[in-house]
Amino acid sequence: MEIQQDENVIDVKNLKMYFPITRGVLRRRVGDIKAVDGISFSIKKNETLGLVGESGCGKTTTGRCILRLYRPTSGDIIFHGRDISKLKDNDLRPIRRHMSAIFQDPYGSLNPRQSAGIIAGLPLKINHMVEKSEFNDHVAALFKLVGLNPSMMDRVPHEFSGGQRQRLGIARAIACRPSLIICDEPISALDVSIQAQIINLLEELQETMGLTYLFIAHDLSVVQHISHRVAVMYLGRIVEITQAPELYANPLHPYTKALLSAVPIANPDLEKNRQRIVLKGEVPSPAHPPMGCHFHPRCELATPDCREHRPSLRNVGGSHEVACFKV
Image 1 (tube, one colour):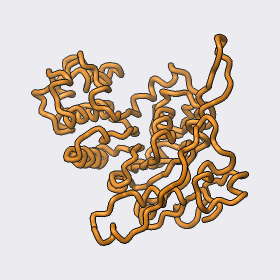
Image 2: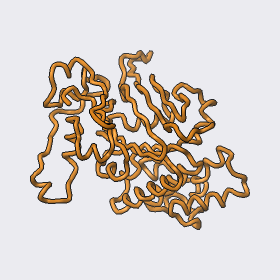
Image 3: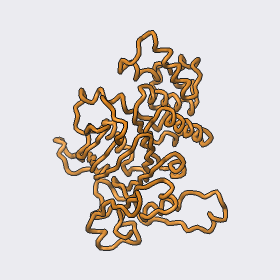
């Protein structure tokens, strides 16, 4: 696969991922779970796009669609100028080495019966990137890159701590020198003391290897630290996307404001005096999402127009885009 250096690494256009709801012996289709409902974004080379939102909003499904672990219902996924959304498995095979993933659970994503060296170097074997005689040297170099001692290559995953397991997962993810890595909440299962180390490691690898990240998380403070841009997702749709400093200084969508109001502030005086925004009701089911703007049942600014029409992302200045009629 030939890669151009002056293009976006990934362009997602009107991506939809619906999971069928079936009933009866004949598994008759009676509806759909609209996990991702028409989202668009792009990520440039060496950029980190943070994707945030509540659990169940479609963040992980978006990442899996980009990796083509799911075949999207509709929409385009342009990876280095080529639409991969409809490619068959055989056509995807040479492309897969250029993208990888870091998973949330650093233990559940590792084979407990394989040694750490085999786990980290397996992508090299699958893609026939090294000779058998050079395999151990390449794996040792990977271990050093992620801060692990090469002498640990013969150990199995249960002999590692949580942070070491995630470093092993990162070593596996960068083995083939991919251009895009989907980070699916890579630090949420780790101790707070270890989280900063993993974030710093990801930033160092991005700088030295020219990596591009889609960083999926629900911790807004972590996303602020690592991301260049942030996209806020609600019930399968992106409601706001802009540069990270702009989002935290000037949130425009009511849902974004509510999310940021829940982030603790280290200054006790500011924390005491600021206003918390408590959303009413529950998140609607993706099987029966509301008409119009998905957020309108919980929004104090909602109007009849919000209930009937879907707001599209529109530019409100600079690179700040928001999907809200009231902005």
